[in-house]
Image 1: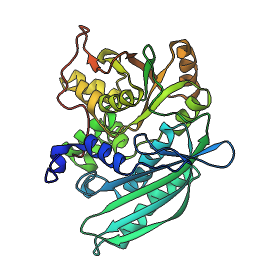
Image 2 (image 1 turned 90 degrees about the vertical axis):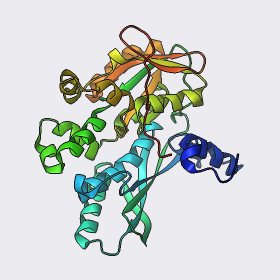
Image 3 (image 1 turned 180 degrees about the vertical axis):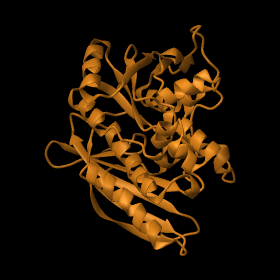
Image 4 (image 1 turned 60 degrees about the horizontal axis):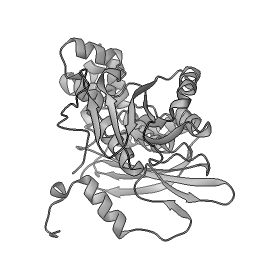
Length: 336
């Protein structure tokens, strides 16, 4: 492949595979490197170490006028906690690296760390260090280290034909919130009729309790968090498992906001299928365990909805009301 090809021509998935080939590790303690929600390495005894890192960059992931420093700090940590949840683990500590313009006000820094600190306290995560550098725009990188018993870790691989596909919460909610933010601005969006959707975008909740329970009770055969869109992240899970999938659009759980949006003639299906930043859990379950998922959903007071089935082959599709595949122009968010 020509070295002068641009990243947007190569695509995000190709770039990840390319780097994975170049940096494959032969360290016997690293059991999973690039390709899942976190890396997994062995520790002494029966535990696995989980490590993940995420970056929020101004102009790409957020605009200052459409959030607050405190919400931004909490979200920065939440998205990394979501990766730990998707592996069935629990967080231990975090590192924060900040790149800031030199004219950034002190109050921005204080409020940003207030958001990080409040979310860290909520889940018992300690700040263990980080880095600070000068830049032309704001960039926040959170690295979270967690753990899980080796026998409990849930990977993207493990799904097999016949498994039921579930999702927590109501995917598409965050994308709807962003749409409303961009339409009305922060102040009006936070007090308007879609404020719940807006806050889902601004302040997502990592599903740590659900991820841990699904792993501990050996219910999830494969799992991923929905950061870039249900359809795109499902495709990633299926690729690792070597299977296909069919989801039924009519079974997608809709929030009150998405119901209102649908009634108004909005393209709700594209938000539910392709909208990113929900940080819900998408997982597969053996059919015999469907009843146990219902009980767990009630126990956690968290919606867990069956939206489709894992199939043989490699095809991943969304089926409309007539049971025919829908044409989805954009399956989710890709940087390149």
